Length: 343
Image (cartoon, rainbow, N blue to C red; front, side):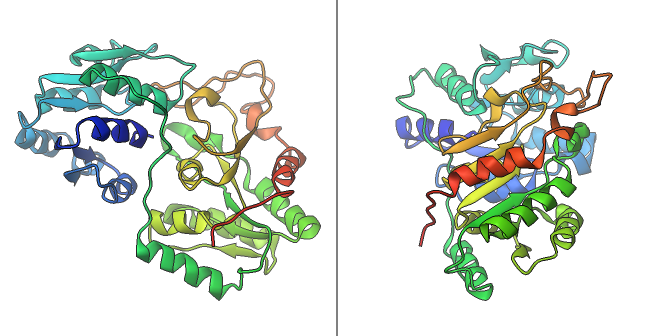
């Protein structure tokens, strides 16, 4: 969700050398595809520990005039890393929650967090203030597909004879698990029930997406649906998943990274959202529907190092646990009147 801001920067400063420092392989996979970066550096901060991390950062110190902590980054570790990088101008966000505790004051160019803005908009605002320009629009998310990605998707479509299958509906039943975010997931039993209903009543083909760490989750749903029209996707990387997501008529997903990949692929997206602030993360620049109970306590998740928790006394995580299959089914069916899939 930083790519629209990146596009705006490169448009105005085409000769700028822009490097990215990332700590997740999935981000590296996306960023290495982009023409905007001179260099993409991956370092496993979580696995290497404090001393090796500091040593790595100090080798880069004083190499940059400007640096930016991509929103959201409300942790002291990110601000310390940016400070040690030594750029004269350091962009960040003045967070509404726990900003001082997380050393936000180490950044020199700051915008104030706005709970009504999308992550994309916050990132554009950061770059506007840092570099002194005004964006002319709100570009879509950028995720270029390689020839290999497209070829893998073509082979998959041919293998399962999906050329004439309609509708093809993608499911992503997973999401991040750090900081108790696993509680944002709609239950796998409900994904299975939705899949059965889509197959029986709409003659749909269901494609189950997710990373290697979500394989058992996908297998559970696949086994419960128990139909030849439900297919596990086991692909090598995020780009191949994106190329296959682009072939889906509709993508049904939790609040997850693949929700944003579907947005980048311009897919019709049905997003199942519980505790998260919808303004932050709704699918960007694509046709989407949000399925949510809109409880009086929602949203309760805002950007902070604090793990996700629920304060309800009647039913913990009621926003997800009482969200029923028929609500999601109706949202998907509204898209089946007219579908479009790239050739």
